Image 1 (spheres, rainbow, N blue to C red):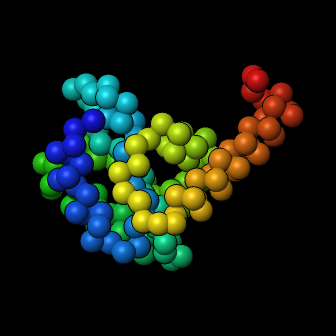
Image 2 (cartoon, rainbow, N blue to C red; image 1 turned 90 degrees about the horizontal axis):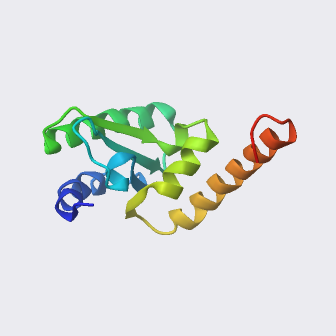
Length: 130
């Protein structure tokens, strides 16, 4: 992963005190960058109001797109993702690029537990392979 790229965007995230965790995930996090690769980010916000989280998301996407000079930016808010598989894959395969203590130790175990419970339910009802 390109450290210059990280140094360029971290200040954008740091201007929001509500942002506690930022992950880069997808092809760029795996180092498999192709001509169609976009920038996939996930943030965890310490903000209860769903509308404020949405506003922060839109504002961030605009600022990141401007900084990187591309519209190929996708940003999701971990708080608002309903599917446990996506949240789990983000923390498992993504690269944590910003952390404000102690949120990683609070949020990641919760996501892993949610995923394990979900996966066990699928297994119990024969909806997936082991």
